[in-house]
Image 1 (cartoon, rainbow, N blue to C red):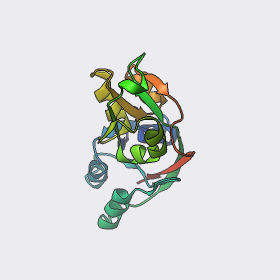
Image 2: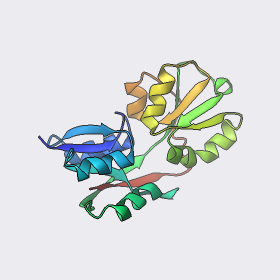
Image 3: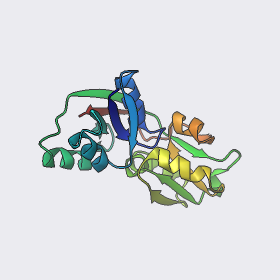
Length: 178
């Protein structure tokens, strides 16, 4: 069966887009970076890749455009639209005052900057490779850390939604099929 690469680990918005497109026709393969998805396509390790192109608040995902411009063997073959709804994830019972650091993908941190400024201006921001990776990290740490992520990451990593719908505005993110 063919594989479809997406930015992992499990629980990312890219996984959601891949599932939406692939159904039961593909095996999902989490990749650690956008570059590794491109490499997988070029080497035929995966038949397709799913990558975010832009979102309604933060605009274009520049790294993906750079990779497209540098790799003439990779072509866009379709698009999947994913609605992005961010939550502040943490250990059950954690208060906002306890949160000293917020981990997430740079895009998600930017998409929630108004919320962070208003409610968590005291917290340090730490960029990681995906929203699901942030959830994975904090699931193994104490209550001073929180993550910005989605419902899937909350469930997968046994985290509570400390606050819901924290994005600055409604997100509609088209993901490319390569």
